[in-house]
Image 1 (spheres, helix red, strand yellow):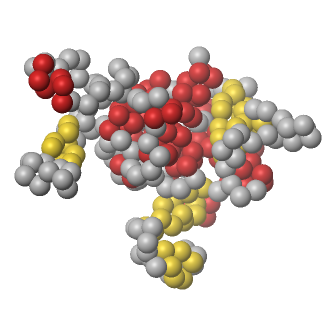
Image 2 (cartoon, helix red, strand yellow):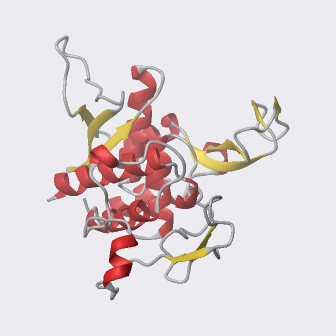
Image 3 (tube, helix red, strand yellow):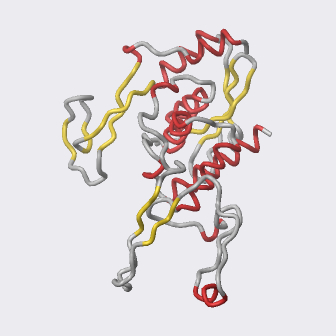
Length: 262
């Protein structure tokens, strides 16, 4: 792939090729007919610009009429195989370069379209349309206020400062060590059997997630949020909004991408 082809893939789409993807401000928002996109979903909602499967396919054909994709695995019937989470992993080849993509959906057809869009994003297709806000979860200056447990009303709120690099050492007295919880693994990530089952992502997951982006070669807040949006199948405006399950899924996917790229 030469520079001209790469630039053509990243070229901005015309307004007629751009759709609106609604994202209700709350999961509990009452549903109604939307005056912006015409859909029936939770209101109020923000609408993110996105490019669908047809427009993505058209862009690939313009740049490389012989582009192709293939599943990572086939089932016993010779059809594309889904993984344990019902995701479809594919290899997308454009101008002689092959990159990995993953998609999901209610049918195999939806999975294929989502996977092609996801893999095309790795070539820069429609990256400018994703992610409207900063990726704040690993900002060196971000501070999260954590409320004290209900059983300790007299305790002051604890403050946890997030950083890209975990603390190297901590000095503690013998008495403190006896009352402190067991330390987390050195890489800031707990084993699969101990991963959180619900709620928002943990601080340890946040550190691991953004380290994984670097390992996979994905840089820049827009690219990171676009990756998460395509992987999870819904708009992601900040990693703060990820559930623990979504964060774990993203970390696993990035690890696989880094392994495939090595």
